[in-house]
Length: 235
Ligand SMILES: Nc1ncnc2c1ncn2[C@@H]1O[C@H](COP(=O)(O)OP(=O)(O)OP(=O)(O)O)[C@@H](O)[C@H]1O
Image 1 (cartoon, helix red, strand yellow):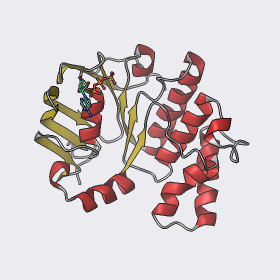
Image 2 (cartoon, rainbow, N blue to C red):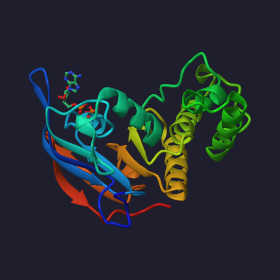
Image 3 (cartoon, protein in one colour):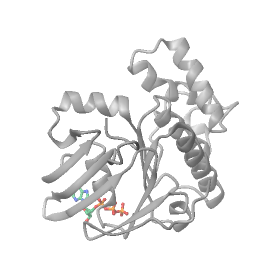
Image 4 (cartoon, rainbow, N blue to C red):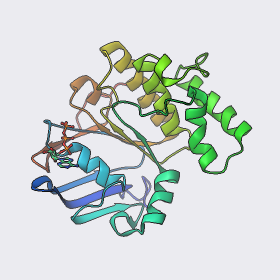
């Protein structure tokens, strides 16, 4: 429906307000994410970046304001529809990959496909292909505790992208990595997202990570204070 062809944003937040107890995390934040673009959201610690991501991904409902995804009001969808949509259209990656410790890399990546009804053998086949794209070939049988931080994050990215989502939400995906591993993760994410036309909302406080984005939006005290299209794009 709404996509690059119509010029409409794929995902749009308008005037979001979200309070946690006495803390105002968002105070009227507005943001557009276009189909296929990589958008970096930057800002000081506590400025509301993660809360904004959670609202946009339908993980948290805003107190006020709207989140529109592909023409639908996400903030008004019933929980069942919302979780279905999160499973089919969104992928998420957090700072500490949050892989399931008991499962191998292959099983971690195959899991979202199996939850969506793909037979085990087909899910494993596709999971293997995605691990290869993220340079984790040969480590399919490792469990998260046996991987380096970079391998675990690249496995987490494979898991986020294996279902071919329209949007990937990445909250500080390089935050726990050294700079080389961080670069490898970002190169893999940016390359794969561009190849598959997946939009990425990337939270980071690291300028080198933000440089992989097409655009940058800065948050300050719960509002978006600047949007910048003139980033150096590393492809
Ligand atoms: N679940 C919660 N309960 C209480 N306060 C919260 C909760 N989540 C966030 N906050 C508060 O809301 C504000 C915004 O938090 P948020 O995590 O969105 O910011 P951030 O920019 O992502 O920060 P950081 O870069 O440190 O992760 C902060 O003051 C934080 O302490």
